[in-house]
Length: 420
Ligand code: HAM
Image (cartoon, rainbow, N blue to C red):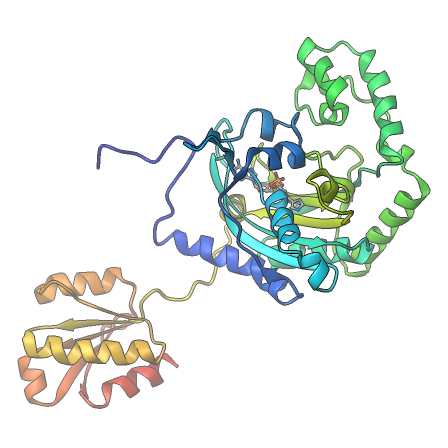
């Protein structure tokens, strides 16, 4: 061990487990690529102000969890706690909404940072794959995103997840509801902090997990009963479209999200095998965010799925992903001539797309075969001076243990045909 360790709340992805993370990212990205979403990458840090305005000054993410710092030049930056504000900032900066068709559909994959209290499933550095559809108000777009996330989870083999769906209304009906909720909260027996939160962001109080708070919220007014006709009709169409696609969901009139930019459709994907950190993904519509960060009106919708928690959910369900073999062929040369010959064969195999590795560092047969075993290779190719003098190499089937002499010039074709 070195003097150093990974910082608190972070962990390293190491083989062989790291292959699962790659597979999860790929499984989430594949349906997006197939549905008109283009790949976007943005910097790992942005102006603090972008998140303060976008995600919301009063949210935990901005007020408590942001890695904010000042550069030597005096610029205030923050490591990105989420992707939506950055992606929208980038799209506006490049005028994607003017040069292309609307909606602009983008997907991304990367690391995010939140200074949270670490526990299983909650880290200070985590990874998301996300999608944003910018510049269109169409229930089919909300439905598309929910259907694609469902498809991603299902292709991974995940079963015990649920989709919670709600509408948070719009700038017409939400303020009326907000006032009604505030009136209700003021009449409860709440501590000072919570009462303060009720004044700044009353919807967040609904999300308070404490038993003492929850038991007083039974009669709280529900946004569902305050939705204006336009929001109601919009939400009904989203529900119909998802239902028609045979994607099961649950209406959750109390679902609020930890970011302030949401309007109308909001949803969360929860997994029942994960304990308290049960949200494997979430998202919704954010029709006002563009204006909040200085852009034009651009109604948009998106989601982000947590890669770390998706891997935990797969483990909780005991799903074994079908991962491609890291190594199919392992070459073991005994002597200098064999090194030259087998190194060339490995290079040739790799060019043909066969996963091949080589015993480096002049090991003896025993040590090299141990490595061949550990590599998980299906075949080992062993050659010594005597084999080469006879024009052959030894092909060992690592499963049956059977060993066959094959001509040096035939070995590549033989392996290709055996590996299909
Ligand atoms: P979020 O709900 O904050 O939404 O995060 C999405 C997902 O990221 C969560 O459901 C969870 O799986 C994962 N996640 C969040 N925080 C952590 C953490 N500390 N440790 C491990 N995993 C975590 C957003 O970030 C929005 N930008 C989603 C969105 C996109 N809305 C519209 N477009």
